[in-house]
Image 1 (tube, rainbow, N blue to C red):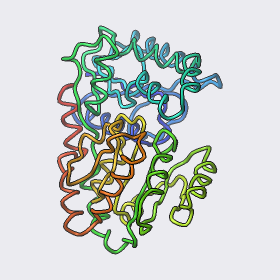
Image 2: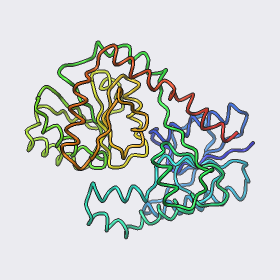
Image 3: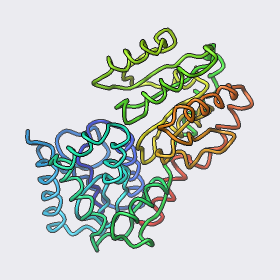
Image 4: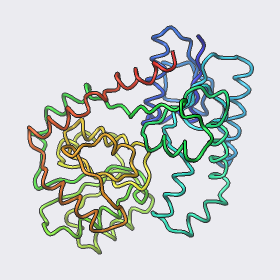
Length: 362
């Protein structure tokens, strides 16, 4: 069986790139011949790659060029399975790991206001993404549409003309087994006092402003927050922390390639996103024994229980954010609690989730 994977960018090994690599390995193990269609340089070494040169055009033009390149290649080679990992018009199987762009744009109304949201309607990049998204989801050749949360599944069914039987929800997997050695050492790395952790690129969408506001309302000052990730407006969030008199209780780390030490020393991950199809850090934190505070707009919140996390009732309500943080502080990491939280996501080990995903393909 000939299988082609579609991943427009494959240079940086983030969450989607990891899934692409694992899916390719699974097909190869089943005896399939796998090809990856991409653009520019790639970090993959185990997959044969056909790469379209990446031209210095605006993003929306590059997206259209890549889609035309994909359609031409498919016509010439006629693979049995075309597995899409981002947004293209034609595929037999699609993992919608980026969620629904129409829903993402709507979420910006709450995070950035009406003016910015209104201007997005005229941005050619957003218009192109919406065009490709609609045609890809509604293409009759699409046999199976995978989502990583029920939230995204509902958004697709409510926004586009997609048959419900095509949609399959498979939550994101986590390197549960691989994290065992690091988890075993957390007690040696744990700091005092109560340690909050925030991880994410694009602080506004990830809800950092909401988190800082909530922390400023806590009666106790016995906590510390570590902020990891990049944002072009980091100075604005530093200023917010100073204005809220939190500067002594917050450390801005910036981007890092190794978040494991921060999981080890933290009690609670806070991911108050305005839109996240399924934030990988949710299950990574759980696999490292951390209590998790999330929002309903993070599909990853679906794997939380009352013993492993709390979901903020109203992200725009300061008291709701404060109440969730107060509940988290009642659940500091202990040996017993960390083991229990870690066990709650054992079934989400990558091997299990990948098998669930791929059993609908082969």
